Image (cartoon, rainbow, N blue to C red):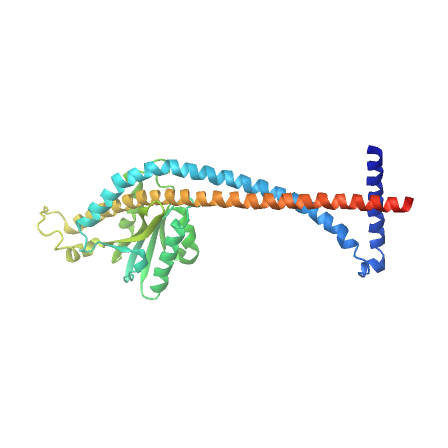
Length: 333
């Protein structure tokens, strides 16, 4: 039986070789006999199987990476939420509430509060991507503000985080003053905001400071928040009712309010960075979970397609062997 099977297989190979030689003749090339497409269809199937296998391996690797990133973000999120609740919220609520309504305001980013004639933007973004719309949302929001005020306002930009800087540098690089990266790479502390606070010693000609960052709502939701601080030179006029009743010594009033503004800005920036870190981890956890599920679905679909294609190839080979055997049987008869 084995000898007969080998003989049939060899003869079918001879038949395929003969068909290929006949297909090279003009009559076959002009479409009289459609033997050539049938043969090369089998070759394309063989190549597609290899490509499908490579894609399946690649997608499986991506699935492992996204799953690991999801688990890492999940493990770090608990500590980030505790820090947000114990540090960020007190820093933001107390300092924004101290002079709220008297030159210090909070607005939802969707409101797009008009930019004054001269403003200083401090943008809080992240250094790493793959965290949903955490950075892209802020970039779009800032672009909308700058587009609306491009002919009426002069804006100076300071950015915390490389993703925000890379998203705005191409179109608004001339407005850049400071770009700080890897803030609190190991452990964020109050001292880490010093590079951003130093800008107040270098830029003094502005009407208002606008700190733009993400605000935590829940594990699956966040929003962009704008926090406004006035120029120290305007604090006496804009906040005179807010600090009414406070007593201070005979120190220089300008220096006093400059120090007060730096302290308030540092506290708000510190709280914003902590809150933004929690938002980043939550967004990364969700996005990597979605990416893992999508990779799993894609791998299953490719696996099904691979098996179907492989089975079709086997069926084609069997059909050729049977046809060859039948042809040999007819010739012998």
